[in-house]
Length: 480
Image (tube, rainbow, N blue to C red):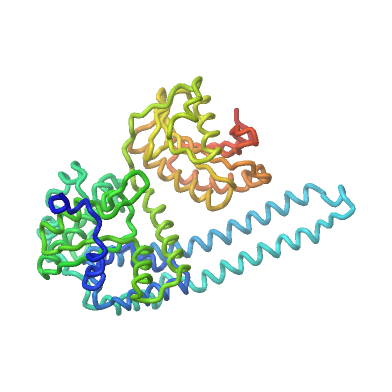
């Protein structure tokens, strides 16, 4: 049976040996862009690994184009991350210092020295700011010489695919795209619902019009065409796109390339062995197969950079809602009996609160938002954490943008993001500190969209207690 359905089978170890010996290694744009997101030492090792296989590298023209178009934004995002850290840190320092002084701690204990405590506290923050400055100095500038791109240019010299010569060539590359997307034929069907804003919908390059939703399909068909013309038999495709229109996934488990991709490239070219890797897995194989030296730390850094990039990209994905229902709030025993992949007490406590407050809701196992209120159509997204941290606040802000997209797309009646930490002893102070940051971001979203954020905590009795609600009108300290 294997011969009739070989696309559903992983490559054997013998096939993998042949693959790694002979394969053309095809790089996606995100692999090159994520190099800019790496710290210096990891970046050096990654580029060195690419140099070790440079003679076998190839990049589809559209992937190279997307790299050039998106590179400035990636550099800018990296700089803004550092700048925002410094600005927000200074704001938090000032606020915490003022709130601590208002406690008049020295009046309540002979051994409390406010000045010494504050001096030690500020010294720690000063070290954090110095570390951020180091990151800024080793990051690529938006203007001026770019040694990272120069290295990439040198490695990929003569290894970029042919550009479409006319609009007819572009049309040929996307022929039948809508039908493929309707039938969930990979790749690209997960990009069919990208945000329909002018700056994200289409762009011109060298007089030719490209639709962003067709980017993956264009790349794929350029790979198919080049593989057929060159007669290559072995292909490795490296991408940090983890969506299921590239990968074969069962729940959270990735089994390998999407079988439809394996079948198509074998059917339309002479390729016999085709496999896909993320950047991190690619480097792991480079290391394990002794192609080049790569440290475990670099592999971890590469995996982290890809994860951060995916979070940003996911803002433009608008998954469809499922119809699954959660029982009414007066029957909470299902929390222990039903498997909704709720992995923590925090999430369970929030879910109980949602049910008591809103009644019957629909639950989405793997889509956004987590819940939709039956009666009103309001969307609800849950963000749970053991601690109320700045990283989680950034996640909340990302969810706000996703909520805005969802409301514009679905016409929902409103949206609530519920953010909670478990027994954080500093929850009240931190909630107040982060509330202003969230409010600032929320006020940049169109006023007609009804989005609110609830900050709270889960106590030792596993009960969610909302403390702060943030909406367009401002911040309220209590919530019923």
